[in-house]
Image (cartoon, rainbow, N blue to C red; front, top):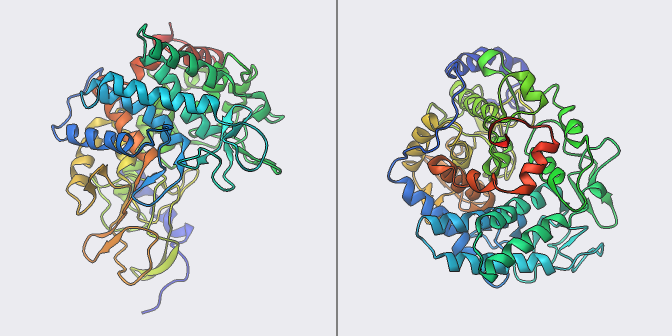
Length: 477
């Protein structure tokens, strides 16, 4: 048998496009916001606690840093720290740790970031201009190798810090210090320095090389960068920064009528900002014109992601109504292998999402966090997906869901980047990833009782950032 040297061509995919449109017709016609509290299956208690334990067990309690992944030996991810700072109070409210335990580790974390060395030297620094490097050494907290100074990962860290500053509201000295440090750390960032001539924020910076050419433009998780940057009391983004961001939306719209939405293929781009920021009922100029809010936009994107997996134009194994979810995640490895009469291309860690959307990529790899991170948007389709994935062989373990799996990858003789292959059920990752764990626990908390949203609505930084971006209505009123 001969195999094509390339994946399915664009002509073949376009021929199958009506399948995707037909599947998308399952989207409810009316916009339905998640209720204030949603009853979840009993086993979600176990999932939530296991996911929480990833952060509590694996954090370095001497400095608060959290590994990017586990059990593979790893550097610290500042984004994972932001998720961790949000997870600790959830653990208190659920009775898994005491308030004092959470307070003490949070204070240790904030003291580290408040005093970590800043400067433009290529080594020995944790950050520069109030921002922090994407990855840090777990023990020393210094820049890991040649990683970039990251605007978006710093923002994820800041959102966790702002959450801590709003949640620890008691009068005792330790909680007062958390509030003070939260404001000090987040207001120290020099946002104008990170901004280009168009008013857009760069994705990153390297000592001796300067800024990464690509800025936060289009529609993706960069939304939170602009809200936090505009909300700073120190050196905030300039007036008009949100307009510079939204001016780049054209070309990102997909669908018609009830399926029309700003698209970004990997679901994390629709989830991360909205884990902390409650966009229900508030609108900027773009959404006032569109007639719905960003929460509804993410709900539609979730349905579109599922619809694509149901249509399954690449003919991967396992995809269906309850097995779906494309986002950034681990993969089996960067290899090309024969699959159903063609040569299929597989990838290691990569962003994934429906073909035909910005940042598209589909190699048959699915991630539990893709569906579960959208729990608050569409529990009616996410809960069945979670139930189905929990039953998937070897996918649910010590810290809940392992990062990803690929039912089509059954090649036992191929060297893997990570994980293992079962001849029947395919490849399953061997690691848990901090940022993907964080999206799961945050979505569960917001679905249960607005656990993150209700705290962040008290954050002056978030309120100020949204108002400077032109948002009105809802809880902002």
